[in-house]
Length: 207
Image (cartoon, rainbow, N blue to C red):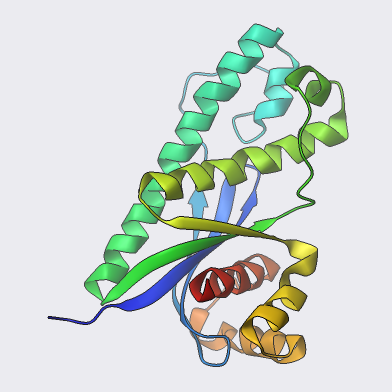
């Protein structure tokens, strides 16, 4: 019987999309087995017409609707985002399974981690709308992971490297160097999105 090796996803979201990285090994000997951008919106899905805003900004759209309509729109958009995330994660997981890797967890890079107020309060504050949209797409990835039985963990971006140094028992400066060096094998783009997603993935792999 073939022995399976453990791998994990690392994810950093933006409005309407996410950077997904699949990692294995450890921060001392890191391996990147997939790196891609996944879409979390369907441009062709029916949606209210709001000038200047599309499905990648669901709370901006919701702001122009009545509360009941906004709730329905956000619920519908959340289902679409979760479905798209699940499809992408399943595709990568299946490809890695063929190569002998089993996905054991997913680490999501978080923003402030603050709790969101009621919908009416969110829609009354432009900064809160942006905060809510980030959480909206992170939650889509969470739901997708839970749907396919992958454990989810999260870490605030500002704490990422210090927490990794503590939990993985490896200096933060050396973690940064190791992650930066992965550019050679991971290819472009290898920006802060992919780097931070990778570190979140190693934390999930360790967990």
